[in-house]
Image (cartoon, rainbow over all chains, first blue to last red; front, top):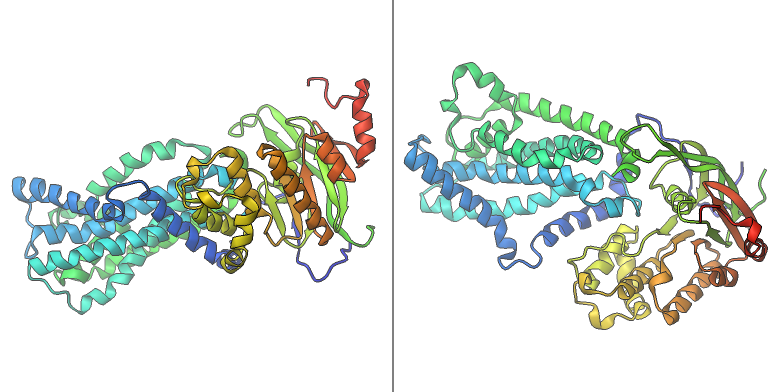
Length: 279
Length: 237
């Protein structure tokens, strides 16, 4: 068949095979829209609110206060040399980012079904935008750490330069699992229902409110399977210089996060054919 | 073999769906054996009862959904306006949405900036530009949405019954705009339930009935045919 054309790109719409190439080139071509989606998510969240963007800071600050009162004051959990508020806030910053990004990514397709069923763009932009938009919140709450650490007389050392590694690990973990969950959520909206519960259990299974030294040796290997353990421990190390770089755990976490990411990408591509019909 | 200047071709497009997509019971044929070819610069009307498959066909051509069998082949960029306000964020102002929707439809920010005034002019909503669109009337919504979509740089434009909400004066301007698109050599596929609009705008019409092509050809002819009582498109309606 021949098309008479002025060098126009011809594309073909045909039945979708189960396993599709990832087509990351197309994602790159849509990078501007990705950015616009990410900013839209952040802006939209604080429209018609009094506190506006300060909500980003209020949430981890309040969690820190609650944790300090319950875990440090009443339950006497020791955070070693680091003052408990700094200890827990350094963990809450990446944790809040992770939970927020994961939840947003999981709901990204379902919550935007009207766009999904009416406009074409690579569907992967939506979960990607969720984890990228959360970075703005993450940086805002990192700024709160500055006065907090100054108050307790802490100055971060060279270790702070490794912070981007842990941010990236949190991002990849949220994205990998988010890709899986967003695709499953289209078919079974149960995912949206389960998310608050799952993330709450996950919080207790991650050493955010307590040090990992409190965890019995026998179940430590389980803890090492949780990529967020590395992220949280890594953040503490990078910000306060206390403890050691959890290198072995980081390698395990990194491989787990990458496994989720690669399988999540392919699964998402496989499922996205049905999004507009099923969502 | 096709003639030269063929712009879009569909061959044996069939799409099977289920009334409950989560299960595999109740098979429905949204589209069956759709064949057509459309030349550059043609304006083609698309008619049929609710559920005849018009929207599915446009979605398929827009790469939003996929066929079960068959294929379509299209040259160049497709621009679709399948729903009024698709891509709008209700909390955002008209100005913010103008950029958001433009970008969602695949326009460059620089291009949107360049035709910003033109879009605002065409929509006639200047006074509401900094109001969240959730406070817009449906007429204002469609004005802004169409104004943005009209500036898409696409070779083939698909419209799904989108301008019906606007007032008479605005509808007239939309139709002029669509005609202008065709004069520029762009191809237009246009869904409408309004026979006068079809007669006015589209020399050719494709009529769908239960997912099949029931008629493809001269608009006047199909309208004459439909006017006869024995050829209703579907006995149920």
